[in-house]
Length: 354
Image (cartoon, rainbow, N blue to C red; front, side, top):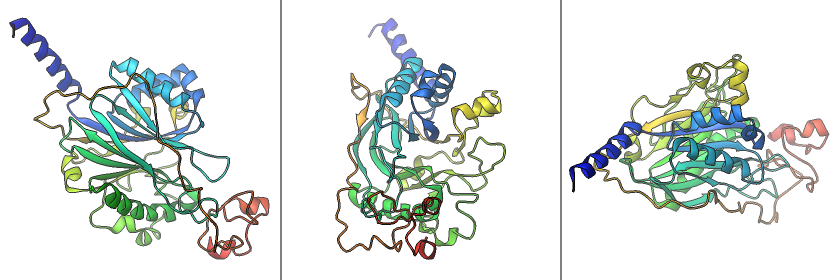
């Protein structure tokens, strides 16, 4: 090796470690994210400015059935950073015409999604499913962090059923352990787990809160909302697994207040989202040798369809709300969703059960 080659390699290595002194994970509800936020160049550039802080981001509220908007944003992120980002996108999820997608945006040169699936929470057609938008699970292999294999669970609960859905994340956690044979799990997203949706009286009934192996990393005192009229810890990280917990830098889990960090007006901040991202740092592997994953020539990985709609309603009483809170369909004789009263479509026992 010539002296010139040595110094070039040293410069490259130094540059990598200077720009990647820590590996950052984030969760960000980009409120009603669609192409309109990409074509608005001011909002788009602010989103890129935020997302470039992270190696791995779970994004909620991706609205359109097509992936054009999220792929366009990731393309802009890659161009701005000079780094190869890619995105894994879920099915279009929901019980009515209102639907959302989850997206994992990640550094493709150092992270590789190896498995993914939509959690099966019951029969959507019959209204016996638990989640309005069932969690999207993805397993990643990581080259640069001390934890090499980790599973992420993305969630955006329904505000109307947040207590039930946050509790049911315990079942998702158990399912991920059994299905992926790992305990290194991070459940991240917009839990709606505070203020009027989940109150102090609800916490004793929520299994996810009391399992000793699960660690809540965003405190109840954190404000993850942009609004000056709210102070709510809606967005959360909940982690398990010895390797995962040892990889997390203590006290780095927090909301990133881009409103203050970038000196924005309230309206400018709200144009980006009504949530702040929550973020945390993972320890880098001191023995990392510079290996890179091969990157794809195309952007966007389709997470495949959710199978929750492919089920039979045999034995289900679709005229009752018992065990069916949140059920909605134009084909059902009555409904159990929060807005059924507005349309006069509630089942007779809606108030008794929901």
